[in-house]
Length: 459
Image 1 (cartoon, rainbow, N blue to C red):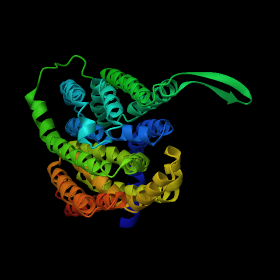
Image 2 (cartoon, rainbow, N blue to C red):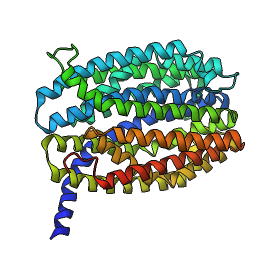
Image 3 (cartoon, rainbow, N blue to C red):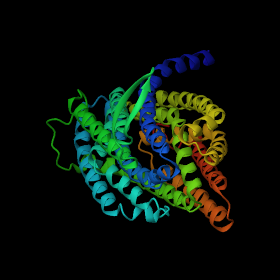
Image 4 (spheres, helix red, strand yellow):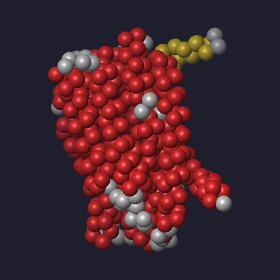
């Protein structure tokens, strides 16, 4: 009877989980596709162009992850309010999220634009690509207010159970980016289609064209998500005051601040990590850039399920439903492991083909295949870390992931890479080995904490 009951529970929860997760997976896939398309199109211009784009990519992660971390605090409160059936509280929380959009959007426009000339230098980019890399970085951050709106408002929609709207916006962003890339990256050229020569117009802006295309697409996405929030029947802030409300902001920031520190510290670690890799030369920089882009697509199932885990755990907490919280934890971890096993296997098998999509350099393809196959083995373990962190975010338990995340990043990945690359003179494979060790350490620490159950306020 117990087995049958648990089996029924699993089947009852699976449709709910996947209804929330699949639009987020598709959204993440479309966002990853933007990176794929930019990298592939720019890669056709040569290794130097790929390195120019990749030289500042980890700084982009630093900024984007910090903004998205702010949204985590609002996610927890909105999901909790929706679980308790309190629409007024959910809408008031979104009105306060508007202040976060304005603050982060303006801050992360001004800072990157002022520092754009220095970032490639700090990242140890080759002097030959520093000017192009700086301009690419500058253009990407001109629409940062729209990017902040897309991130924080998108989180608000997902917390309310609407994962399809951000997905549809991501599809639109991707289509715009692809079309503008074709127009802006390449010069006017003649293409033969079924024996008929067709003149395709183009600006011939190269790397800069890719940046302009992405900036326009980001602006479109931010506008669409903002309109969707304002029209939403549950979380629309229309009619609510936009003045700071400490009763809402304090608990949101209490949840968001550790997560923001974690993501900032972790992303800063990515910057230092990439800086050490950039010092290895153009081949290593290009390989690292492409391999990171390839790998990100195979994390899509994990991060899609993380959104479902955060939303559903927040709903269960708001409703005070202990039984649902316990059932959710077991089912969603099992599903995540299965998905990441599949994605890790596919990454291992298709690593050479995926590298070949973005570069014709045999040295880049060979080295990239090696590091991708190394990381593919660790994917299921990293997937468990993603899910457990998502459930903790949903209930506002963000301090422990902050401590574990920073310690594993700086002591294992950065410390290990410094020793192997800088002191021992080893190459990219050693650096990626340290990255895998970081992921496994995080899996062990978060796994132990999860099994002890202390993260669950309804235990």
